[in-house]
Image 1: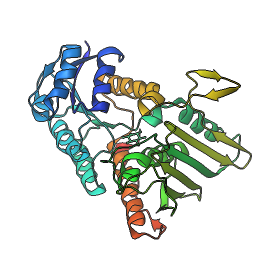
Image 2: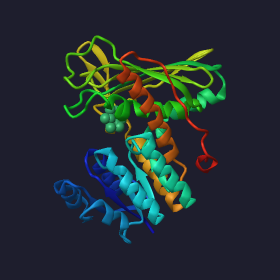
Image 3: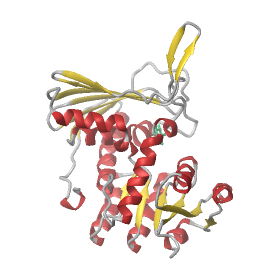
Image 4: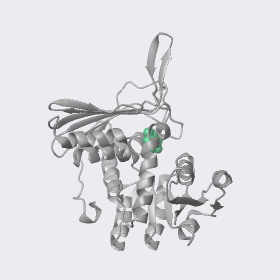
Length: 339
Ligand code: ISE
């Protein structure tokens, strides 16, 4: 029997997950939606003929819903619905970030551990991207020697006025923070966030753009990540790992090859939904398979807590105005969260 899934929060990301469940994911059925903006819930319901719940809690509580996707905005609302699902022993897929501070993530981790069962998967979809998976495998093969430096860039075409100066860290670079921790298989010991004096004229008063994050891992790998969210060019994700005997870099998936006048150009995806389409499909299939097998294997709420702890430190460094390199203290991953 197909897993009956409800989605709380059907803004752009939640609506895309609803479409995925209804049309792509195997062994899953979209059964309901809830959103504080009724027109959004209505639009998804009209498309897929599913029930509209009056609020997120009644969807999570419904006996007709086996598992839940939480994709609300603002992200602070994630917590309430994730905790409700844990209370009921229901599996829940939560979009990133898990919630808005390490302290609040801790509440989710504690509730899940107290219940004695892993019920939460967090939406760190890059862990399902072919390029990062290959990078991880190549590093583990040892063929290129030890990784020494990572140069990464996370670039969005443009952002709206509601995207403020905190968001490059908590909303955007959090993906790189998580996926590099996963790919390198190490925690970080320190990090900083620098605001270069020269900014793009395409930004707005409440956003310093670009920003530069640095991280150092336990074994001493140095990472720098450019965050540039008004690049005017497209969704451009770069990751280059410099090793003792080689370099492993990501390539954007080649959907199309454009020939135009005398030049041949590379297609840059428009946004994350296009760039990571396959990764999103695969993370959701992994969630459904995990629920049906009664054993989740994807990124955990501990990974959500770790990423948030790191982002809290980066935010402090940014706000201090001196790009100070600050210590990152992460407790050892509990056995409960080791796959
Ligand atoms: C968005 O929420 C994402 O998750 C995207 O991956 C990221 O590129 C974008 O900057 C965020 O706003």
